[in-house]
Image (cartoon, rainbow, N blue to C red; front, top):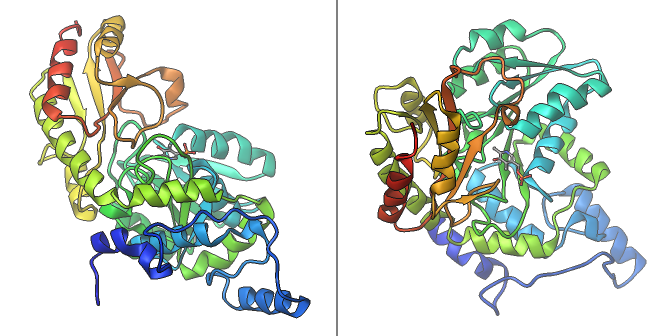
Length: 391
Ligand SMILES: *Cc1c(COP(=O)(O)O)cnc(C)c1O
């Protein structure tokens, strides 16, 4: 029977087992075989089909991680999905699978801050040069391409500033110049947008966020097409980036309700955005206002929007913005997002890094909100009470 993905998420364990509803957590380093020839047979099978779930040692994973890979490969509509202990591990794996000393990489200016540190600073030590392009002007991307350019690394929307880019245009520039492409798709997850289907070679999701959904586990996924599979497989083998089975189990458990939660995050975020869009002091960074370029680019590629949004607040009084954030009762102050709960964060200048194309005048402050699964009317009341402090 042809099942919809929503049904598949609820029934996957049945595809693998006929006893418990949920798959067992298989913890292993050593795997015991019947004989030496049995070991060799398994190794041959693995060599022939590295995606088939054949293991001769725990570093390759266990049946628990294999189930998670199967689910995510289906969700991504990709050739394969690699798992890493954190989302950032997947970013590291994507870049180090492709780029070599003497080559260059072009990165979206509003990329996640640790990705910026990795590309801008750390890659230098390997004689790899990084250049940043303006997400709102892809001519800047074209101009940076040289014979040495190996990879274009996109994050969409931009971290904290939420620019939505013309992704097909980026892909066509890359294809024309024979350059690999990667995208950080943590904001939307493949539930709302499938990068590999559109033509990206690699797509990263921090499983720490919406996949797990409960702020209690970390993990990362790197979906790939057939073209880059071998490169990534080789690099993962030598870097030893392995997701543990207990974390894989929790992420699989979170995925059961990914659709239900993301639909609700979207519904709540839209209600909150509706309220915030009426406030004159606030410029909303969320695909909500229909005539904006960001909305058009979101609509072109995405089937939905998640719960993370930014606010630009215009005021000369920075402390009043901090007071606004500090007065929120239902929003926790903390990093990460994608859990069931609402969060707020005032952004300092250093948290933004050396952005070259940041659209922010000196009287504007940035606040990031994650809209959780609480009653949205309570969240709106909380925001209304606290926004009073903005002078
Ligand atoms: C959180 C995050 C990451 C890193 O994920 P971790 O699981 O925290 O390592 C990468 N990209 C984006 C956009 C993120 O928000």
